[in-house]
Structures are given as structure tokens and as C-alpha cells.
Image (tube, rainbow, N blue to C red; front, side, top):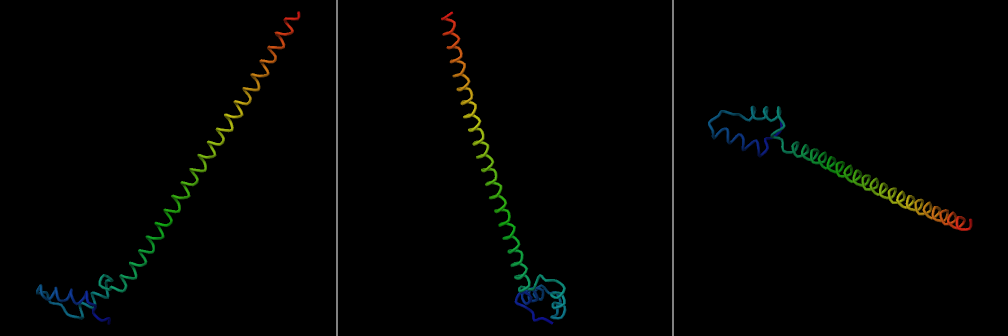
Amino acid sequence: MPRLCEVDRHLALGLLQAGLPISKVSLRMNVNRTSIFRPRQRLHETDQDLHAVVVEVVVVVVVVVVVVVVVVVVVAAAVAVAVVVVVLVSFVVDTFSFKLSIWDTKIAVSYNFV
């Protein structure tokens, strides 16, 4: 049987001061049934819980960073495509407009000669 730890002694003392009958055997049986009064096991479980929480937080942070990077890359690509489209359209419009003006001039010139 395990030795009574400090928490168990305080519990037993509190129960005895309250006038409730309790023995070391019943307290030990109670300790063996539940892990509430086992500080070492609770500490180990707490370390495991803390490790699980840290892993979850790291995973969430990594996922958020990846999502933000993907969104920034997609927005930057969309802006780059929009700039290229605007430059190409303005180049085509300027070129077409220049060709039309030359054509109009040639028509006007040939029209004057007739």
C-alpha cells in the first residue's frame, strides 16, 4: 500500500476534526480508487496536458501563418495580373488608336489629291 501523502494527511485531519470516523485503511483504499490525491501522477498528467496544449497552440499558429501567407500571395498575384492586363489593354488601345490616326491621315491626304 502506498504511503499517505501530505494532501491525504490534511484530508484525514479535516475529516477527523469534522467528527467523521476514518481510518488509514479506508483512506488508502479511497486513494487507490481515485487519482485525485496522487500528486505525482497528477503532475505527470498535468505535464501531458500541458504538452498537448502546447502542441495544439503551435499547430494553430502554424496553420494561421500558412493561411495568411497564402492569402498574401494570392492577393499579390491578383494585383500583378491586374497590372499586366491594364498595361496590355492600354498598349493595344494606344497602338490601335495610332494606326487609326495614320489611316485617317492617309485617307485625308489621298482625298486631297483627288
